[in-house]
Length: 378
Ligand SMILES: Cc1ncc(COP(=O)(O)O)c(C=O)c1O
Image (cartoon, rainbow, N blue to C red; front, side, top):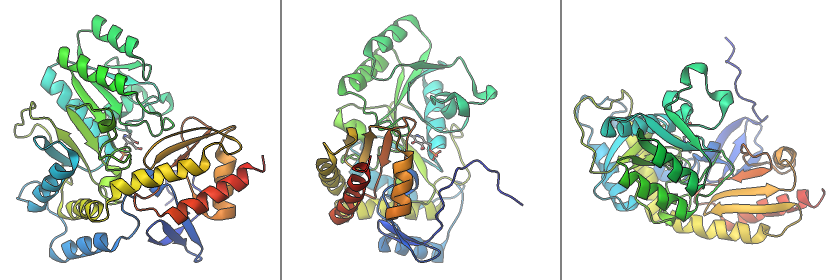
Protein backbone atom coordinates (compact mmCIF):
# COMPACT_ATOMS: atom_id res chain seq x y z
CA UNK A 1 0.00 0.00 0.00
CA UNK A 2 1.28 3.48 -0.83
CA UNK A 3 1.16 6.39 1.60
CA UNK A 4 -1.35 9.17 0.93
CA UNK A 5 0.94 11.68 -0.74
CA UNK A 6 0.51 14.96 1.13
CA UNK A 7 4.06 15.85 2.19
CA UNK A 8 6.76 17.38 -0.05
CA UNK A 9 9.65 15.53 1.64
CA UNK A 10 13.30 16.53 1.66
CA UNK A 11 15.55 13.72 0.55
CA UNK A 12 16.97 12.71 3.95
CA UNK A 13 16.30 9.55 5.99
CA UNK A 14 17.33 9.93 9.64
CA UNK A 15 18.27 6.70 11.37
CA UNK A 16 19.84 7.78 14.67
CA UNK A 17 19.98 11.02 16.61
CA UNK A 18 21.63 12.73 19.54
CA UNK A 19 21.36 16.32 20.81
CA UNK A 20 21.20 18.73 17.87
CA UNK A 21 22.38 16.12 15.36
CA UNK A 22 21.05 13.12 13.51
CA UNK A 23 22.65 10.60 11.19
CA UNK A 24 21.00 9.31 8.04
CA UNK A 25 20.83 5.68 6.90
CA UNK A 26 24.25 6.08 5.21
CA UNK A 27 25.90 7.45 8.35
CA UNK A 28 26.01 11.12 7.20
CA UNK A 29 25.70 13.60 10.06
CA UNK A 30 23.16 16.47 9.93
CA UNK A 31 22.78 19.53 12.13
CA UNK A 32 19.10 19.85 13.04
CA UNK A 33 18.01 23.48 13.37
CA UNK A 34 14.33 22.73 12.89
CA UNK A 35 13.47 19.88 15.32
CA UNK A 36 10.68 18.47 13.12
CA UNK A 37 8.53 21.65 13.25
CA UNK A 38 9.78 22.94 16.65
CA UNK A 39 9.18 19.68 18.49
CA UNK A 40 12.67 18.78 19.71
CA UNK A 41 13.11 20.84 22.87
CA UNK A 42 15.69 19.03 25.04
CA UNK A 43 17.60 17.55 22.10
CA UNK A 44 17.24 14.21 20.34
CA UNK A 45 17.56 11.07 22.46
CA UNK A 46 18.45 12.90 25.66
CA UNK A 47 19.68 10.32 28.25
CA UNK A 48 17.10 11.46 30.85
CA UNK A 49 14.33 11.23 28.25
CA UNK A 50 15.40 7.70 27.26
CA UNK A 51 15.67 6.67 30.92
CA UNK A 52 12.21 7.98 31.93
CA UNK A 53 10.53 6.43 28.89
CA UNK A 54 12.18 3.03 29.14
CA UNK A 55 11.66 2.83 32.90
CA UNK A 56 8.00 3.74 32.43
CA UNK A 57 7.60 1.19 29.65
CA UNK A 58 9.08 -1.49 31.93
CA UNK A 59 6.26 -0.73 34.38
CA UNK A 60 3.16 0.20 32.36
CA UNK A 61 2.89 2.05 29.06
CA UNK A 62 -0.78 2.82 28.73
CA UNK A 63 -4.06 3.12 30.42
CA UNK A 64 -6.80 5.62 29.61
CA UNK A 65 -8.50 8.17 31.89
CA UNK A 66 -10.59 5.50 33.50
CA UNK A 67 -8.18 4.80 36.34
CA UNK A 68 -5.82 6.93 38.43
CA UNK A 69 -2.61 7.95 36.62
CA UNK A 70 -0.48 9.69 39.28
CA UNK A 71 2.25 10.75 36.85
CA UNK A 72 -0.29 13.24 35.37
CA UNK A 73 -0.25 15.11 38.69
CA UNK A 74 3.55 15.01 38.73
CA UNK A 75 3.58 16.75 35.35
CA UNK A 76 0.97 19.25 36.57
CA UNK A 77 3.04 19.93 39.69
CA UNK A 78 6.15 20.57 37.66
CA UNK A 79 4.18 22.80 35.27
CA UNK A 80 2.93 24.82 38.22
CA UNK A 81 6.51 25.56 39.14
CA UNK A 82 7.58 26.48 35.60
CA UNK A 83 4.60 28.14 33.99
CA UNK A 84 3.86 30.98 36.40
CA UNK A 85 0.20 29.85 36.61
CA UNK A 86 -0.03 28.12 40.02
CA UNK A 87 -3.83 28.26 40.28
CA UNK A 88 -4.58 27.04 36.73
CA UNK A 89 -5.58 23.43 36.02
CA UNK A 90 -4.24 21.12 33.33
CA UNK A 91 -6.13 19.12 30.70
CA UNK A 92 -3.96 16.69 28.76
CA UNK A 93 -4.49 15.59 25.16
CA UNK A 94 -2.39 14.41 22.21
CA UNK A 95 -1.54 17.22 19.80
CA UNK A 96 -1.59 20.94 19.17
CA UNK A 97 -4.77 20.97 17.12
CA UNK A 98 -6.56 18.97 19.78
CA UNK A 99 -5.37 21.38 22.47
CA UNK A 100 -6.80 24.33 20.52
CA UNK A 101 -9.99 22.43 19.75
CA UNK A 102 -10.56 21.96 23.48
CA UNK A 103 -9.62 25.57 24.26
CA UNK A 104 -12.15 26.89 21.73
CA UNK A 105 -14.84 24.51 22.94
CA UNK A 106 -14.26 25.57 26.54
CA UNK A 107 -14.50 29.25 25.57
CA UNK A 108 -17.87 28.61 23.98
CA UNK A 109 -19.16 26.41 26.82
CA UNK A 110 -18.11 29.02 29.37
CA UNK A 111 -19.54 32.12 27.67
CA UNK A 112 -22.50 30.51 25.90
CA UNK A 113 -21.36 32.43 22.80
CA UNK A 114 -20.31 31.33 19.32
CA UNK A 115 -17.74 33.55 17.62
CA UNK A 116 -13.97 33.26 17.79
CA UNK A 117 -11.67 36.05 16.62
CA UNK A 118 -8.40 34.99 14.97
CA UNK A 119 -5.73 36.86 13.04
CA UNK A 120 -4.14 37.11 9.62
CA UNK A 121 -1.05 34.90 9.38
CA UNK A 122 -2.32 32.50 12.05
CA UNK A 123 -1.89 28.73 12.16
CA UNK A 124 -3.79 26.83 14.83
CA UNK A 125 -4.00 23.29 13.43
CA UNK A 126 -5.95 21.14 11.02
CA UNK A 127 -8.96 19.82 12.95
CA UNK A 128 -12.42 21.38 12.61
CA UNK A 129 -12.34 24.48 14.82
CA UNK A 130 -8.56 24.84 14.76
CA UNK A 131 -8.43 24.96 10.96
CA UNK A 132 -11.43 27.31 10.82
CA UNK A 133 -9.30 29.87 12.66
CA UNK A 134 -6.19 29.21 10.56
CA UNK A 135 -5.42 31.79 7.87
CA UNK A 136 -4.87 29.44 4.95
CA UNK A 137 -7.90 28.86 2.70
CA UNK A 138 -6.14 25.92 0.98
CA UNK A 139 -6.43 23.72 4.07
CA UNK A 140 -9.95 24.77 5.10
CA UNK A 141 -12.43 22.26 3.61
CA UNK A 142 -15.95 23.48 2.80
CA UNK A 143 -17.27 21.65 5.87
CA UNK A 144 -14.88 23.64 8.11
CA UNK A 145 -15.87 27.05 6.74
CA UNK A 146 -17.96 28.83 9.31
CA UNK A 147 -19.25 32.31 10.08
CA UNK A 148 -18.34 31.63 13.68
CA UNK A 149 -14.70 32.46 12.97
CA UNK A 150 -13.84 36.10 12.37
CA UNK A 151 -10.45 36.98 10.90
CA UNK A 152 -8.91 40.35 11.80
CA UNK A 153 -5.58 41.90 10.81
CA UNK A 154 -2.72 40.89 13.12
CA UNK A 155 -1.43 43.55 15.53
CA UNK A 156 -4.31 45.91 14.60
CA UNK A 157 -5.80 47.33 17.80
CA UNK A 158 -8.43 49.47 16.05
CA UNK A 159 -9.87 46.53 14.12
CA UNK A 160 -10.10 44.56 17.35
CA UNK A 161 -11.87 47.37 19.19
CA UNK A 162 -14.29 47.82 16.28
CA UNK A 163 -15.16 44.11 16.21
CA UNK A 164 -15.90 44.01 19.95
CA UNK A 165 -18.10 47.12 19.59
CA UNK A 166 -20.19 45.67 16.77
CA UNK A 167 -20.30 41.97 17.65
CA UNK A 168 -22.04 40.81 20.81
CA UNK A 169 -21.40 37.10 20.25
CA UNK A 170 -17.63 36.87 20.80
CA UNK A 171 -16.75 33.79 22.86
CA UNK A 172 -13.01 34.29 22.60
CA UNK A 173 -9.88 35.51 20.86
CA UNK A 174 -7.13 33.09 19.85
CA UNK A 175 -3.62 34.36 19.18
CA UNK A 176 -0.20 32.71 18.92
CA UNK A 177 2.41 33.76 21.48
CA UNK A 178 4.57 34.28 18.40
CA UNK A 179 3.21 33.36 14.96
CA UNK A 180 5.32 30.46 13.71
CA UNK A 181 4.03 29.22 10.36
CA UNK A 182 3.10 32.86 9.61
CA UNK A 183 6.81 33.75 9.55
CA UNK A 184 7.84 34.40 13.17
CA UNK A 185 5.63 37.47 13.56
CA UNK A 186 5.65 38.83 17.09
CA UNK A 187 2.50 40.38 18.56
CA UNK A 188 3.15 43.76 20.15
CA UNK A 189 2.71 43.97 23.92
CA UNK A 190 0.03 46.65 23.35
CA UNK A 191 -1.91 44.30 21.06
CA UNK A 192 -1.88 41.41 23.56
CA UNK A 193 -2.79 43.77 26.39
CA UNK A 194 -5.75 45.06 24.35
CA UNK A 195 -6.92 41.49 23.72
CA UNK A 196 -6.76 40.83 27.46
CA UNK A 197 -8.63 44.04 28.30
CA UNK A 198 -11.40 43.56 25.72
CA UNK A 199 -11.90 39.91 26.66
CA UNK A 200 -12.23 40.85 30.33
CA UNK A 201 -14.70 43.66 29.59
CA UNK A 202 -16.83 41.62 27.21
CA UNK A 203 -17.00 38.22 28.91
CA UNK A 204 -14.83 36.62 26.23
CA UNK A 205 -11.97 34.15 26.64
CA UNK A 206 -8.37 35.05 25.83
CA UNK A 207 -6.69 31.95 24.35
CA UNK A 208 -2.91 32.03 23.90
CA UNK A 209 -1.68 29.38 21.47
CA UNK A 210 1.80 28.58 22.79
CA UNK A 211 2.09 25.33 20.87
CA UNK A 212 5.14 26.47 18.95
CA UNK A 213 6.32 29.50 20.94
CA UNK A 214 5.89 27.98 24.41
CA UNK A 215 7.86 25.61 26.60
CA UNK A 216 10.87 27.87 26.96
CA UNK A 217 11.53 28.50 23.28
CA UNK A 218 11.21 32.28 23.59
CA UNK A 219 13.47 32.47 26.66
CA UNK A 220 10.38 32.69 28.92
CA UNK A 221 8.24 29.64 29.57
CA UNK A 222 5.51 31.18 27.39
CA UNK A 223 6.16 33.90 24.81
CA UNK A 224 3.15 35.97 25.95
CA UNK A 225 4.96 36.44 29.28
CA UNK A 226 7.25 38.84 27.44
CA UNK A 227 4.18 41.10 27.13
CA UNK A 228 3.02 40.72 30.71
CA UNK A 229 -0.50 39.44 29.99
CA UNK A 230 -2.55 36.66 31.58
CA UNK A 231 -4.56 34.59 29.10
CA UNK A 232 -7.52 32.55 30.32
CA UNK A 233 -6.44 29.41 28.45
CA UNK A 234 -2.98 28.50 27.17
CA UNK A 235 -2.53 25.70 24.64
CA UNK A 236 0.68 23.65 24.48
CA UNK A 237 2.14 20.71 22.51
CA UNK A 238 5.30 20.34 20.34
CA UNK A 239 8.22 20.83 22.79
CA UNK A 240 6.12 19.44 25.64
CA UNK A 241 7.02 15.82 24.82
CA UNK A 242 10.24 16.29 22.80
CA UNK A 243 8.69 14.11 20.08
CA UNK A 244 6.34 11.93 22.10
CA UNK A 245 2.81 13.06 21.08
CA UNK A 246 1.31 15.08 23.91
CA UNK A 247 -0.60 18.35 24.15
CA UNK A 248 -2.51 20.18 26.80
CA UNK A 249 -4.26 23.32 27.94
CA UNK A 250 -3.75 25.35 31.10
CA UNK A 251 -7.12 26.59 32.31
CA UNK A 252 -7.85 29.59 34.54
CA UNK A 253 -9.70 28.88 37.81
CA UNK A 254 -12.70 30.82 36.48
CA UNK A 255 -13.68 27.77 34.38
CA UNK A 256 -15.71 25.12 36.13
CA UNK A 257 -15.08 21.49 35.28
CA UNK A 258 -17.75 18.81 35.15
CA UNK A 259 -17.53 15.12 34.32
CA UNK A 260 -17.56 14.52 30.59
CA UNK A 261 -17.12 18.17 29.59
CA UNK A 262 -13.81 17.33 27.85
CA UNK A 263 -12.26 13.95 27.19
CA UNK A 264 -9.77 11.80 25.28
CA UNK A 265 -8.75 8.15 25.08
CA UNK A 266 -4.99 8.53 24.73
CA UNK A 267 -4.39 11.92 26.38
CA UNK A 268 -2.29 11.86 29.56
CA UNK A 269 -1.24 8.22 29.29
CA UNK A 270 1.74 6.94 31.31
CA UNK A 271 4.31 7.06 28.53
CA UNK A 272 3.31 10.53 27.30
CA UNK A 273 3.54 11.85 30.85
CA UNK A 274 6.96 10.23 31.35
CA UNK A 275 8.14 12.13 28.25
CA UNK A 276 6.60 15.39 29.51
CA UNK A 277 8.21 14.94 32.92
CA UNK A 278 11.62 14.30 31.38
CA UNK A 279 11.33 17.52 29.36
CA UNK A 280 10.55 19.63 32.41
CA UNK A 281 13.24 18.00 34.58
CA UNK A 282 15.89 18.54 31.90
CA UNK A 283 14.73 22.11 31.30
CA UNK A 284 15.22 22.80 34.99
CA UNK A 285 18.52 20.95 35.48
CA UNK A 286 20.14 22.35 32.34
CA UNK A 287 18.69 25.88 32.58
CA UNK A 288 17.35 25.64 29.05
CA UNK A 289 15.27 28.82 29.08
CA UNK A 290 18.38 30.82 29.88
CA UNK A 291 20.28 28.97 27.16
CA UNK A 292 17.49 29.67 24.63
CA UNK A 293 17.74 33.38 25.30
CA UNK A 294 21.52 33.45 25.24
CA UNK A 295 21.88 31.33 22.10
CA UNK A 296 19.16 33.26 20.24
CA UNK A 297 20.85 36.57 21.03
CA UNK A 298 24.18 35.10 19.95
CA UNK A 299 23.00 33.78 16.57
CA UNK A 300 21.18 36.98 15.73
CA UNK A 301 24.21 39.11 16.68
CA UNK A 302 26.33 37.10 14.21
CA UNK A 303 23.79 37.25 11.36
CA UNK A 304 22.55 40.81 11.79
CA UNK A 305 23.61 43.04 8.86
CA UNK A 306 25.02 40.21 6.69
CA UNK A 307 24.58 40.40 2.92
CA UNK A 308 21.09 39.47 1.67
CA UNK A 309 19.53 39.39 5.15
CA UNK A 310 16.72 41.94 5.22
CA UNK A 311 15.30 41.47 8.69
CA UNK A 312 15.50 39.11 11.66
CA UNK A 313 12.54 38.66 14.02
CA UNK A 314 13.11 36.54 17.11
CA UNK A 315 12.66 35.83 20.75
CA UNK A 316 15.08 33.27 22.18
CA UNK A 317 15.35 30.32 19.80
CA UNK A 318 12.27 31.15 17.74
CA UNK A 319 13.99 32.90 14.87
CA UNK A 320 12.73 34.16 11.51
CA UNK A 321 15.37 35.39 9.07
CA UNK A 322 13.96 37.30 6.10
CA UNK A 323 16.24 37.05 3.10
CA UNK A 324 16.26 39.49 0.20
CA UNK A 325 14.59 36.75 -1.91
CA UNK A 326 12.56 33.53 -1.40
CA UNK A 327 14.51 31.20 0.89
CA UNK A 328 13.78 27.78 -0.62
CA UNK A 329 16.95 27.49 -2.70
CA UNK A 330 19.07 28.54 0.28
CA UNK A 331 17.33 25.93 2.47
CA UNK A 332 18.02 23.20 -0.12
CA UNK A 333 21.67 24.25 -0.37
CA UNK A 334 21.99 24.16 3.42
CA UNK A 335 20.79 20.54 3.30
CA UNK A 336 22.81 19.40 0.27
CA UNK A 337 26.07 21.27 0.78
CA UNK A 338 26.26 21.61 4.57
CA UNK A 339 23.96 18.88 5.97
CA UNK A 340 21.86 21.40 7.91
CA UNK A 341 18.07 21.42 8.33
CA UNK A 342 16.06 24.64 8.65
CA UNK A 343 12.40 25.48 8.11
CA UNK A 344 10.34 27.81 5.96
CA UNK A 345 7.10 29.75 6.59
CA UNK A 346 4.07 31.04 4.74
CA UNK A 347 6.06 34.22 4.00
CA UNK A 348 8.40 32.89 1.26
CA UNK A 349 11.48 34.91 2.24
CA UNK A 350 11.49 33.68 5.85
CA UNK A 351 13.99 31.05 6.92
CA UNK A 352 12.63 29.62 10.18
CA UNK A 353 15.25 28.46 12.66
CA UNK A 354 14.04 26.45 15.66
CA UNK A 355 16.98 24.63 17.28
CA UNK A 356 16.79 22.44 20.37
CA UNK A 357 16.85 24.57 23.51
CA UNK A 358 20.22 23.09 24.50
CA UNK A 359 21.90 23.87 21.18
CA UNK A 360 25.55 24.82 21.56
CA UNK A 361 27.22 28.02 20.47
CA UNK A 362 29.66 26.16 18.20
CA UNK A 363 26.74 24.57 16.32
CA UNK A 364 25.11 27.95 15.75
CA UNK A 365 28.46 29.34 14.66
CA UNK A 366 28.75 26.52 12.09
CA UNK A 367 25.26 27.33 10.82
CA UNK A 368 25.98 31.06 10.63
CA UNK A 369 29.19 30.44 8.66
CA UNK A 370 27.35 28.23 6.18
CA UNK A 371 24.46 30.66 5.74
CA UNK A 372 26.74 33.67 5.32
CA UNK A 373 28.87 31.79 2.76
CA UNK A 374 25.77 30.92 0.70
CA UNK A 375 24.26 34.40 0.97
CA UNK A 376 27.51 36.04 -0.17
CA UNK A 377 27.19 34.15 -3.47
CA UNK A 378 23.96 35.93 -4.43
C1 LIG B 1 0.96 27.66 16.68
C2 LIG B 1 0.48 26.29 16.33
N1 LIG B 1 -0.72 25.87 16.77
C3 LIG B 1 -1.17 24.63 16.48
C4 LIG B 1 -0.44 23.75 15.72
C5 LIG B 1 -0.98 22.38 15.43
O1 LIG B 1 -0.28 21.42 16.14
P1 LIG B 1 -0.37 19.87 15.72
O2 LIG B 1 0.32 19.73 14.41
O3 LIG B 1 0.33 19.16 16.85
O4 LIG B 1 -1.81 19.52 15.66
C6 LIG B 1 0.81 24.15 15.23
C7 LIG B 1 1.60 23.24 14.39
O5 LIG B 1 2.46 23.65 13.64
C8 LIG B 1 1.28 25.45 15.54
O6 LIG B 1 2.47 25.89 15.09
